[in-house]
Length: 175
Image 1 (tube, rainbow, N blue to C red):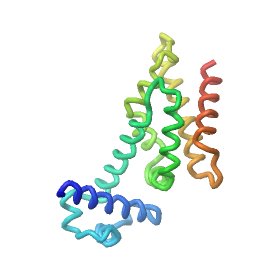
Image 2: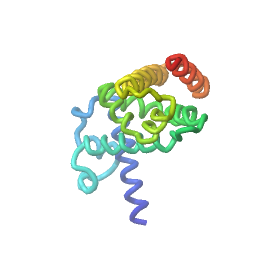
Image 3: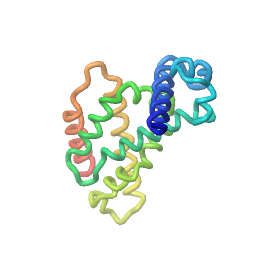
């Protein structure tokens, strides 16, 4: 019962922070208003987190963990599954993109082991490390820019259509 209560409390706090981040930046959000929005006592907040940033960091970590779970190197539907997850988390993604610089968000995504494994597949078979790393960076940053634009699009294509287009672009790049 206690674990369920902890999960519910953290979920309420995360939901409240995401809502507030849709209205203003994290440095403008007080613990008081966060707890009021979540209907949680401030003492309870401090039981789990030291600051709003700690809570935000946990939200980022949860998101990246989910992304990693969706990415399976060698699985052709992996990219589509990842995009379906992002599509279902569109508001969270907007908050993450808005609150973080593009480079820091991308740096967090680059740390995902399954993504590294997928990029280290035998597609990158050059003996030149610099060439492989540069190509990975080019593909990641380009894909991120396309996905970021898709997240903000009012009438986005489906995750499958976007996955197909990204794969097509990557294949063309690798030729």
